[in-house]
Image 1 (cartoon, rainbow, N blue to C red):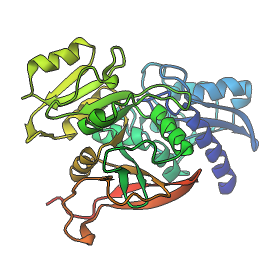
Image 2: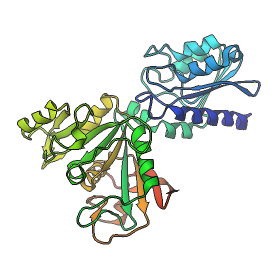
Image 3: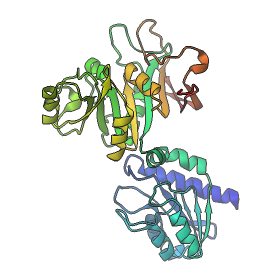
Image 4: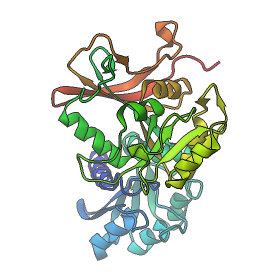
Length: 366
């Protein structure tokens, strides 16, 4: 039975992926209704404000849900939000058993949904494929537990670690397959973060172009306010955010605001801003995941401040020799102090390689 249950939960996890890029700041959730060993209904959370996965699954199952087992990737909610509590839908459907991958850490839930169902007489099991469910909802879990978004550092470099030539040319280091992959991730995250150097050098739009999907918010970190409000990233109506020092020119900041750019100001130290503060604000505004796309100084600052959770490193099979390095100085004196990746994975994208992993800060912050 355990292996059969795992198969149904894997199906629920695959269903949950259908909501990626569509439901944030809500979690990805998939649900499968099983009766006498057969799937009789399934669903996923597909739209923010729309029906939850359980509701879709019960609508699909109809009367066949009675006395069935519900496999769901996250604890059913027990509170009234944009939609009614899912626990009530579970009870009305008449299922007798609930198999849940993980408890919901949201303070409005935190086991209350499971308790409600147990008290109503359902057989409730928690923890099946929990590790997979936690990885799938890493952004949601971090957002709810810490008040910060999941931050992913994206780099595209040569084999010898260069992201641009000596003259600053960077298009294109990686191939078309890698670029499509990046744009797919852009459509999935809530925001993209770049530094002033990237805007000045490339004047990027940072929109989704090679795949279908929504554009994320664009955040530009510029402590000294060197960028121009005429840059393409600050086009009116695009919802860009400028993060700068409160010591910069009020008149210049007003030009950005007049064009529709949100201007967030913070104290700085020699032009360097404590990035945790704007990240906290981004989380409060519903951003659960951010992709840091450049440049080397912003990447180094975020790593030094221990704000990067994951890395996506696209490596082209080429070498430049001299050129711009991917990451600025991290203050590493010995190899033992290096930032490392845990659970590193590698995959082929055309002629390029993608290396991903979770960041491990090996040196004590003290």
